[in-house]
Length: 270
Ligand code: ADP
Ligand code: MG
Image (cartoon, rainbow, N blue to C red; front, side):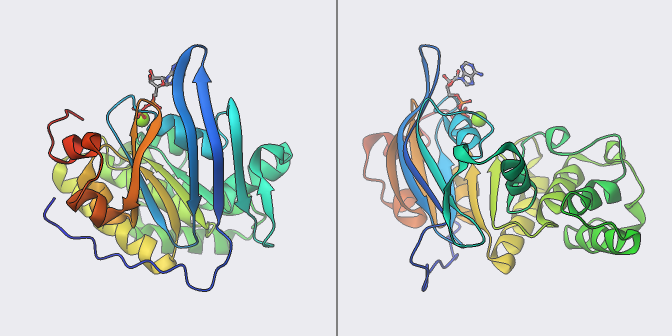
């Protein structure tokens, strides 16, 4: 936790948020997934959602990214034309296009975010084909460029992700998500299943890409060091509710809520 957050965030001249979440709630029968969540994300902002296992982080991320229907509440997203749209009121075709172009989703388990039975190059090219690119040379060129950007050697382009290590699979998943130049990327425990040294490399890479592309991101993590390194702002969850939100350094260095104090002092097993 010593490492300081150097990410500067300035919403600049933008007067509307990219994403606005109001009164969001998800119940599984009687069980609470998340309750009463309000949140805004601004262009270029990186938010970390932290909390113990079972606190509702993944539920919230899956609802925001329309993979789960909320029980209550709204998610509005500012489309490329500047219009705020209710994401649950989009047609199925509009929603699919949004998820393939403007949004990305990086899963903890790369097998959920990749097609394991096609080559690395095809995994990246496929996202471009989904938005209309058909030229083989351009598809292959983009795949090659993106493999290099995530530090996968060009000569692995025709290999299957099955032949890749966990860290490489995760980097391939990131390339596949970023090739369509999304504006918002969702990540659920992106470094979760990896060894510590592999995590550090992936975090460095992610941080560089997010900064250089000016991406907005929502990152779910139980690891406060990941939040420290990548996020501008932190939202702390407990039992489905938001306990505390604030600038990353402020929340981690001077937590206001007793629960956050426990979390930060590592008294809680997360
Ligand atoms: P986290 O990602 O913080 O570990 P989750 O969002 O996965 O938390 O879970 C929040 C709560 O919702 C937990 O009590 C969990 O058991 C419950 N939950 C999550 N997914 C389901 C599901 N598909 N059906 C029923 N309960 C679920
Ligand atoms: Mg989770």
